[in-house]
View (cartoon, protein in one colour):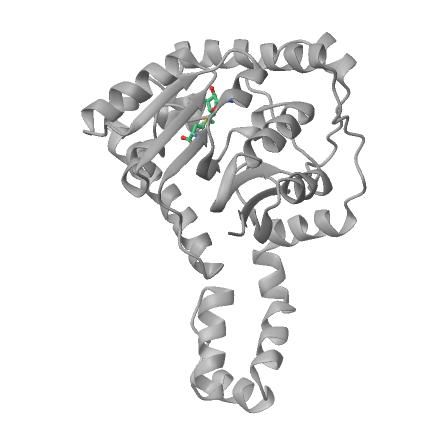
Length: 314
Ligand SMILES: C[S@@+](CC[C@H](N)C(=O)[O-])C[C@H]1O[C@@H](n2cnc3c(N)ncnc32)[C@H](O)[C@@H]1O
């Protein structure tokens, strides 16, 4: 690609438009010598800055982020109390608005679900592709064998994990969502999934070992000590040669967490929490996994959610 073509590509990719004229394009190409010059010129232009205000603001949040006051340690009783609250919340959501509780878009409310069902189901395939792309970026392949999906919900991704793995164990706290998950899997002809409803955190300790740990848009709904307990326990069950792909917010502007205040506060429709990055990395390390990639993602619609890909050496 010559300089002129590169400059034209920068117009289209970064400003979302063609150059105003051939003369302007030729003049810019003559003034900008190499790809770095071109990038710097367009990224610092007023036009780019104005059209990417939200994106730039997001990056600034990251640069200005300070350590947050987040309790991550809990006694057994506290852990149980925190988890009970989450179970109750999801019990209700699973009974009232199961599909909306999975993807909080009004199109997926029960009143509109039938007309948007196909679209909802397609998003599950896209989620599997994100896992496959993460593995490929890390120069590995997604393991086969057994996959543990934490928070299988209504089976949106589970149905596709069932094609990728010999066996899937789907664990969830919501009876309503799990019943819909089983129905969807049956209708899709998937018979290699074991869907389990758990009622207490310790139940995950009895799970067998597996080759893949997978969890997206689940951990974010649990208080920090619960996230840490689940990650510590579930990552330690990955067999050598296996991998983990999970999403969790690690920083949210103005977030803080204390067990006492949380347990005394009014119940929300849908809790949103985080586990600070150093604790997530510690969980990965302690399980003997090698971190291969951390990417910021858009799962929460705000700054600070990350997707992690880690592998367990043979
Ligand atoms: C937003 S939905 C996502 C479902 C699925 N991961 C997906 O992407 O389609 C969250 C699900 O996780 C479940 N969940 C929340 N916290 C959980 C926990 N600590 N253990 C197991 N399931 C949990 C909820 O009941 C709900 O079905």
